[in-house]
Length: 386
Image 1 (cartoon, rainbow, N blue to C red):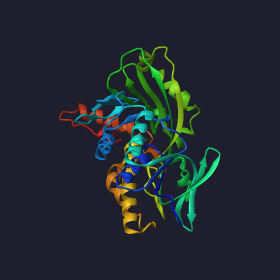
Image 2: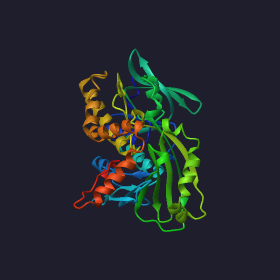
Image 3: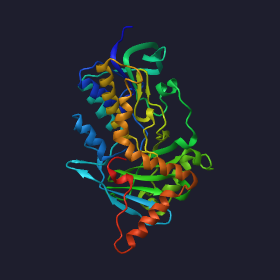
Image 4: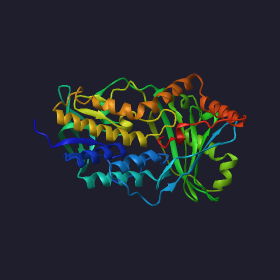
């Protein structure tokens, strides 16, 4: 059966564009597909951790938008505690920052094209199968139906991935999803280089955030696990409005209004999800690689994009495009992410019966800090990854 390219990558966000860049650098014919033209807006908290820039630097991508707002500290606020402040890691000229996803994603997308990947605007409907083997994708380009064939397909098409849905697996329970809303707001007061997360009792498991992206503008939002959100009697917009009405926020924003408010689903990580198939791999949000406590997905997207590319290269070199031939992918992402995800998965499960787990941890860490010889408590937010 003839093929159009070596690898089709579905989805041109951070996972897909990273995979496409690595594959193209190694001389493969790569077709990068997305239903959107770039640049495109993307609902997100817009915080890009240090680790993301470190990983992109390793594949040669160093130039980023100068409008990014560097972040030096994070404050974690519980219902009954004053804020706990942590310094964020920095590495030479790299640091965690707040930058619009339209700008960040565009930089990786352009780099993939510069490395030799080809882009087409195609709305992918699902994989093409030859028995159990994925041999390409079908979709629409404008009003035209298209079928494109390849040796391997990497599905990196987001939380509602058409590739993941078509390849099956059990449906996610509400406890394995979160929902979030973000908007942008101008401020009357000058903002410093600190991001804030508020673990308010009625939002847990979840949190509200205030992320400066300029001296007088911030990304603000609320995220919550879906099973607990469904027990609420308020919409996400109402929950965000309630957070912004708190005195410390009201003083900052004055009479300014939230702009560009948008909600989205977040697929929380679980180990048991299948991500390797005959001829196909799932990366980024399509593979459910989102931290189950912080709901951060940019760093895992870049890592899994790189891992998917390496697994595809290995399978093509060995001439084995079966699930077994692509199994190296699971080994690679486990090595890179499992140590960080394991405690988070445990905490997420505990939060089902103890939703105020993070508030309790903040109380304990505050008490420990105030004891003689108290030691600093670490949180995943300060790791430079999530």
